[in-house]
Length: 207
Image 1 (cartoon, helix red, strand yellow):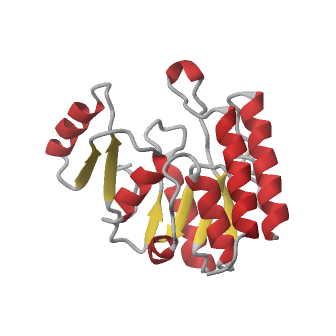
Image 2 (image 1 turned 90 degrees about the horizontal axis):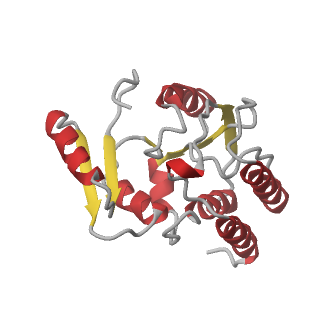
């Protein structure tokens, strides 16, 4: 992340890890004081970690980066170019547009189903709704009533920006999937919850 040639603020959130990650992070931050480390004492989930990091964000845009590096930070420039040149406040990195390798068939087809559902419910063409590479105008992201603590963040934020009338732009990105043996945590129940969140927020009253 630090090697990418864009001006940036890096905020790392350790979400109650128990595998020694915090000690590694603390050592890294000691050598790289430009990186800010925030820690949860207990595991609270992806959505909670994003809200913690978002509270400290100072940049015009916020990009979410999972720590497993399935996604390549060198693609930051692609997302930013669409945001700045196209005037888009929401940009998703699409693995589908880039025809990238898949981890498991069930994940691939589950993601395609969620993308189709989001497109049908919210009137946009979204090829990769569950992508982890999502760029937002920081002011917009901070204004959303985000409540999901876990992986439900992705469908929640998609639904909320669509309800605000924001257009979601997509750009092809690189993707290097990792297997379950390396710690991949998404389960089929997360897919069911994602579908429920998309439907629930589509039917909810506007605020």
